[in-house]
Length: 597
Image: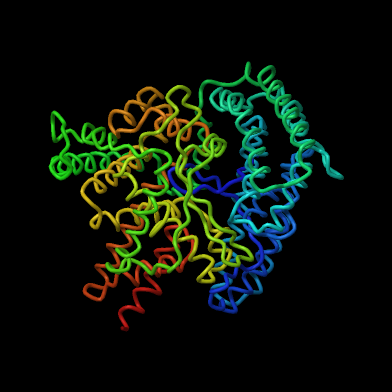
């Protein structure tokens, strides 16, 4: 099992979702869920009880009660025990499927069985191919950062000290996570054909340990968690000792070739929802890259004229982007600027009939230094999906990428033109609206957490960007196209790097010279394709194309009866179904219903 992801970050940053579920999420203003949803959510407890003891931080993050003081299981044979627990749950779910007659619940059971099977396969493949090294300081920061948040009620935040003590082995029945992680690594040392962690990720762990320790201290101070001084001091000692061991025993063995075995990379693509051959994916992405670049060249002179820019060649879109970046917004004004754009977007969505939008304001904030180290790109933190009493998700905007060293600061998001499409992606009608719908519309857990696939999540967010482009100022449209160009580049470069078809320097050139990214953002991208989440970056482009294909097919089927508002709302009502199941729902439910109107 690879290091556990302790934050769900949805957007330009790489999401690493885990399949976790619990009691039905109900917001104060939510309509009563259908009876079949309640029944489905009861059945979801079978898989929850199998998974949550191994991944309690994630269960806690989604609002499951009883796990706020627990930490990930890294004890002896934890991967084997995890697979055994999932296997038993899978068999129970299969038995329930044999008896179930409701077609909706049957579909949910099939989703949950598939989720269990993928988790078992993922654990097996990782154990077969990878050394089990864990960036413990990052893991501990993630688990505490998720709990010490404005999104979490104060009575739950009070459990942070208990969780910290569990990480340190100071709680009853626990051992230090750093000790357990080191034991799991050392017991596999010398095993033939296991890939060591990459030098990139180990170097970043060495560089970031002080940032994570300081970040945890700031969280305990911000939320006034008393009595933590001794444990925070012990945290510093244990984390620095672990990193010293990593530097001595792990770094010398770290690999410089970041490619995954073909079998493992193929599974990575399948797990995020990419269900076509990588060669075909790259071919489609190359065409999209060329066509988007051509559109940017056509738009560039209009942006130059509208903004009064001074560039040598008005058709040079990269030069135009560099000129737009000169409109830099100071860090202390950045959140205010984004909030202004966010406030302008909601009325446009309503006026144009794009999708239903709630009346509540969108939450956003700047990321801390430690958050930027852990998730070095803009991202969205969903609100608890379980027992939600009105908490909202948050759009988090980091200011840089510590892994880039001297060139750590971004210039990709802190200028006026960038706020439009980034807000549409992370906020509305993108991630914020999609995840709020899961709570507010009473969608079953099977169709949210267990059906989770990046192709749906990121495809919707990129589709949301595209829906907004015609209503944005010309410079905002230019940056929207730049980010669309980035998504095509991702779908080319991620497979190419992992299949050995290009190298890191050539890919960097495409991102910096072709797409127009800063060196810091390009570094984040390359680390993402090769270290953080191989395969996932392809999901944006592929998910976007699948929704666009489905939209065109639906328009052709309905003609003048096509209703964009109804179509987009219907997509949100389906939760996070994979592309084929989403298309089936549209063709078998939405299209006939619209024809009858």
